[in-house]
Amino acid sequence: MRIAFRLLPYLYLLLAVLVLVSLVLVVMGMITKLQDPVHRAQDPRQAGTLVVLLVIGIGLSVVYSFNAILLLRKAKRKTSIILSLISCLGFPFGTILGAISLFVLTRKKIKNEYFHEGIGGRALP
Image (tube, rainbow, N blue to C red; front, top):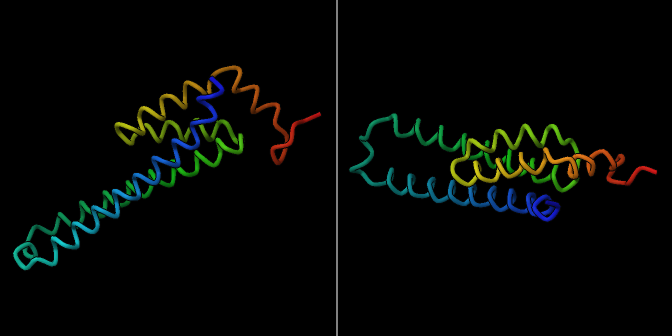
C-alpha cells in the first residue's frame, strides 16, 4: 500500500505532462489545418470545440500537478481526495489513477501518515 502511495505523485506528474504534450500536438494540427485555404471556410463551431478541449485539458493538467504536489508533501489529505475525484473525469487514465488514489487515501495506514506529519513535513514529537 505504501509503495502505491509513493508512486502516485509521479504517476500524476507523468499524466500531466502527457496531457500537455497532447494539447500541443492538437493545437499544432489545428493551426496547420486552418492555414490551408480549403479549410478556412469551415464551421466556426470547430474553433469553439478546440477552445473547450484546451480549457478541459489545461484544467485537468493543473489538477494532476496540484494533486502530485500535495501527495509528495503529504499535506491536505481531504484536498487530495477531492482532486482525485476530479481527476476521474480524465477518461481512461485519469479515471484509473483517481480510483487508485481514492482507494489508497482512504486506507487507515495512509491516513495515519498524514496525521503524524507536522507543519513543514517534520514529524511531531
